[in-house]
Length: 416
Image (tube, rainbow, N blue to C red; front, side, top):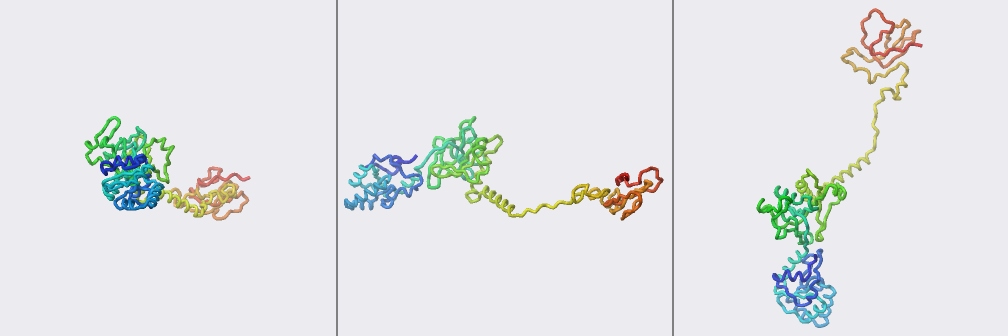
């Protein structure tokens, strides 16, 4: 709500003895907006900055009285075009009749004050610095030295969160209603209404006197608001907020953006610890450390490195079945024992040594081993390579019609 000239007179009548001299019909004229600092809104009469509240001290009023009619009219036109909120005559001086008539005709507020020009300007600067104010529903806390405004729908546990933070050593500023005023171009301050100071309302417990229960150190008079913790339901969090926002959330209060953090409320979540962590994260941001942006930078660097690295296909071991990967590519009767052979020195075959041999089927159905080279006989000869000789059993009488072969060798098919 914008402050008007009438509000200024009412609030400063007792302190500065402001009174109306002329132009009271313009009392609803608003003062300058929130983007203008108090120092820029008031000062001595200066035609270069005629848009601000002009204070006419002894020298300024003496200068006005010495002007001829033509130059005085030019001054009036300059003031009329600039539309200053008000003119104030200090030091208890009487207002010139020409100035009174001009202000009445143009509805320009003309005020008088007994204070000297210097103290008057200083007093009004302090008053104008606090002219912008509003009230918000929530809980204002002092968490780790930072003013944190807790907001959210009714029933989400704002007061319970405040009580938990108080029990962890933090301070309460205001509960339910927070009065907020702008004190500078970059700062807003929250305080508690006089009626609710030191009180916290919790559902099921009623009003709690925090100062009496937890001591004087658990209550604060006022705190600059630097962070807003907004409590939301889980579904609202999923629908309306990003999980990893690259742009920080903000909420504008009285023209000043304030960092905002949304925390989903659910059973089993420690909201007090999350609030403290949000405060510590905000402190890091104020120091120029943004963890989310640092993670995004690392991810982009990793993607860039992978895109610049040439891809080499991995080499594979040769297939155990042969160069073509198929058993049919081997000659008939040959077997590859790359995976099947026991290792040298195996306990079951202490004398095993890999070597090639040829298995020759004799006409009398006896088997004969010829090392290293195949033997040409009228019988059917099937060379078998890649196997090694196994220990042989002691010689004995031949009681079977089958060849005497090692147990590990496959039986040879009959010759055609």
